[in-house]
Length: 252
Length: 324
Ligand SMILES: Nc1ncnc2c1ncn2[C@@H]1O[C@H](COP(=O)(O)OP(=O)(O)O)[C@@H](O)[C@H]1O
Ligand SMILES: [Mg+2]
Image 1 (cartoon, rainbow over the protein chains, first blue to last red):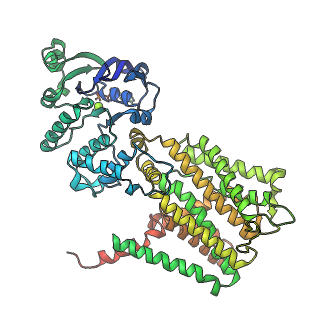
Image 2: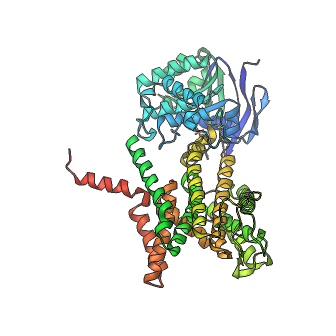
Image 3: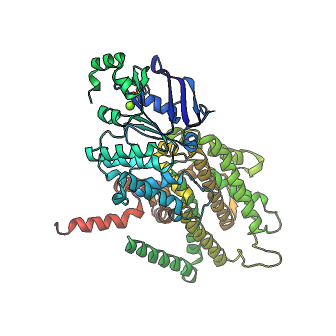
């Protein structure tokens, strides 16, 4: 029971007349990687935006370890332990890779009142920043300006920043998109390790990767939850097969 | 990198030594002008904290400067000198409190709305002092005595004496400069710069950015207030013009002229502004026109401001040299 970290209960989000998510429920459990599948425009990013606090849901509730967190804003949700990455790279392009990670790590112990402390001298923060750069394989680029990294490296940085916040729940929106195959397989290996102590929600188009690492899969189509189950259940689900065969956008 | 910081350190030491030695050689008129540059430099550094570091373009920063200057004039007794430490502390606190109140409201807006609302508040402050009995109308208020820095029975220095006033202002300016540099490398300062770069990402990393922006707003207001106190003490009178939006625009131009995002730039901008105004007003009565031209030229041809000039020249020299 206590391993159920995040519960979404019938989340609905409307944009004008469009229901981008319609009564979507899902549960993220510590130790398990939950994949969210669906064609483009299915509402996957909208779902993550509601869980992370970037978008308020039109209806429905969100619980973190049993506590209703629907009213918390994005920074508050980050501080309780929900971290996210973005589908479109969202970093500090003018800062070094190290400073990107350092700022992310500093958020766990902000020390806003220590106006005369040297931020670069805070050991715990700095150590964390170096640790996550090593985890994603960016240690050698520590002093590069983030905006000058390759697209794939910026994707790695995006992940490193979430990791630096020590989140219990990781909401990862297409983290592998744009990575080279070597970087991607390294990242899949990393997700595999991270899952042991966390709950992960992964949006990903690469079916081979998804079926290889997911413990559970939820399929969204047109904002509706089509099916939830183990990879084997999803693979043999008739509705899913039909939906997919009809979808061109989904042949990754 | 280290060579560069080394050069900057030497340059700063040389400038400081020159400023310290100046009253020995300069005339009274010019010593007062340099003191004015230092006061406006503090004012510009405080605005740069918002504009250059946090990304908040305030067009109402004169409110905190002017309110503190008025506080000095209003608190001081009519027939005796006030205590410097008391008026200074009280005026800075009042400015900080006003910034807190205004900040709580204006920081809920963004972009052009933020500019407009800060402008509206400074106009309200202007009319409060211009049109009510509180501020002595459009003539303002004279300060009959310079405040005394008395601590118990001891007078460490005497502000009635011109060069001692100069050194006091120089000391405050150096303290503010060093203090702002420290704050900018603190965890708080790094967050401000992060907000300027990408506020959305700062929020998703767990920073409640409103609180940080409010902190920056209050700190900037308090420092503008400190500049306002020094201004009142230096010139001995206050007028509603100190609060007007012209003054807000004036200090914003100093920041842009010197180069946003650099305390040195802010002081340079204040110096350049005072020097150019002085020079142009000797030439023609339409000096404001010339001033506008200079600002335009800087924005168009030197986007980083005066502080970017050495780097630009180095680049020019390099690109003029042989190619590899
Ligand atoms: N901020 C928004 N305003 C209006 N419509 C939006 C907004 N965000 C997403 N949508 C719409 O909601 C639907 C789901 O989008 P999204 O969640 O991004 O899908 P996915 O991530 O699965 O590709 C799309 O039709 C999209 O156009
Ligand atoms: Mg998406």
